[in-house]
Length: 492
Image (cartoon, rainbow, N blue to C red):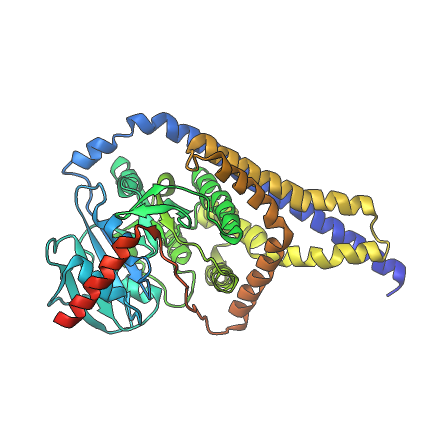
């Protein structure tokens, strides 16, 4: 190959990557604009939403909250406190302790005065582990149930919870989450508004790091102290809030976060519960639900609500964050491979023709293109295939345009929800959006490529341990909880 041909190939590759980033960021902008329209509609209807009527109505569908927990001692009491005091007419909380090796169960037993009860676990959806015992809160056995089982993974724990659930709606919540008081009313309301068509509804997830939690409630919202977590706040606003709200408005939502999503139990059972063969079990369930309902020609809706909120703890260490992001991207690769027959297939409507192709081109492949750009653009300059002017334009499109998207997301969030009341927090959010482009994005792309490669090579998926720092609660609450654990162990 002649040097001239090499330069031509590099020139074409650099321009193709340039066009890719224009399309990628423009697609984000479209989703954010759609999200903005959805928020305007939501805010106009908020005063007339009928939440109080739903709370008082005897016809409101009861909900089973399923909380898989593995080594969640740092924040489990605050999370369950929030869940057992939600504003909702009738619901139960099912905590499934998936073989924790820390003090998760002991904290729950001491704080909620758990007593063991005989209970048979049905097998409506398959699970692989052994259920060791079932416990209920002495003061309110109908509200809180804690299941102890051998370790089998998150999907397995969720399936045990689905089997034990008594109510027609099941809400899956991460154990490191704290729910706003009206969160369950908000995420369940679409089922009351359109009970014949709504199949699933996802709620927004925000980062709790740095926030003050008292009695299981987020009482003071602040930007986290760590710049690593601040960048994740910007990511969550852009992707979890804006992106999913935009897809919901398009009728193409294929991801509902495992941290906060609600489903019709009969449909979850009909499609076999949570899958054991992917680490992206939450999104896979939604795609499988689309698959199932589309093939039967059902008229249905899978939607997203923007508030109230589930607050979750984000990784504060690079090693933990890397494991999380490799796992997330591996999940995308596994889901798209598992449901590849749907991609581009008109039988599946917007899901097959728009949503899943988008995830292939702009989610799965994005980190590969990002890393390719970091190699090809400097090589193009070195080989004189492109000039300095092109490199500047490329940087503006790849990073400047991306920064603009983050700024717009922060602006829409502030105008719509005003969750961060201090100007200092907003300033830190803006600075985090800038910091994200210098090192964070590039390392993130490496983790994501490694996650997808692991899926394609068939390497065993490893969750690893998530280091929990716990919520910023009143210190005396933790001390009292530990003292109660000691007393409980002596009694036992």
